[in-house]
Length: 146
Image (tube, rainbow, N blue to C red; front, side, top):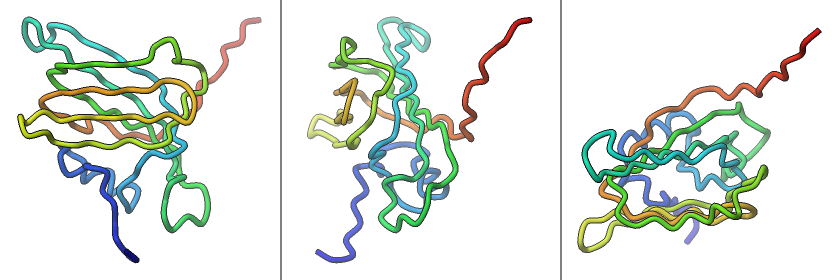
């Protein structure tokens, strides 16, 4: 259908409206780069595991693409992870994303899927998710010693 807008399930994610404000559309994060995956156990309670995933994105999946946009680092935090399938053996320097999506199940779990172009794939079932940070990306500066 012409003009149909796919939201990739972002309506299920807290603070996701910030993505639309920054990028002007709902990103699939196509060709975005996975910078890090961090798991925290017990920080918010015994037996509770949260997973934070950092993406580097510059609007390369914009349906109205004209030119590269500014680089951003987006942190997505998934709370109370119940099921995790992360292909850590595939986590390489160039972890490029094909797309990400969210689906809510009948038993009220939130499913997150990251389908890779190359590198790590991620499937998580959690109770909720939230965009916890969006900030400009600055390439690391190589340190030099004299």
